[in-house]
Length: 151
View 1 (spheres, helix red, strand yellow):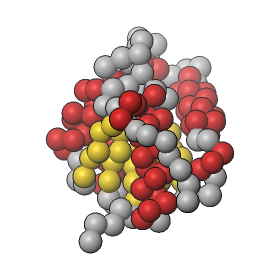
View 2 (tube, helix red, strand yellow):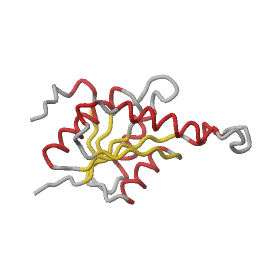
View 3 (cartoon, helix red, strand yellow):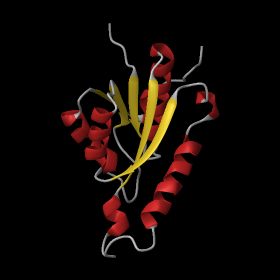
């Protein structure tokens, strides 16, 4: 029988990652899964052309993203076992590494990411993760989901 003990949801704050969170919550209720939310800060964007991080930009971006991650989870999911983490690095590599290190059973992620600076971020990332992940990967589009109900 398939059992998803730990589900990883990469979060970029797009509608795709909101939908992925909804799917994970539904699976979490059905399977009693622990849900891991992972937000990646692209460190290259922080330290590019400034010779390191003399203004502690990395630390403030991590804190800001953790706050955004906490705000991203709707109160209706407060009873679920949800872990939140902000990490830095190359997005698909960090997702795969996190999945391996935390014995993740399933990754659920949006098929397309945020518009603007990271418009293609999750689209390309979803492809790389699906190819290299140590577990099953479910990619979702925002319009693919119906209403989520808590039984």
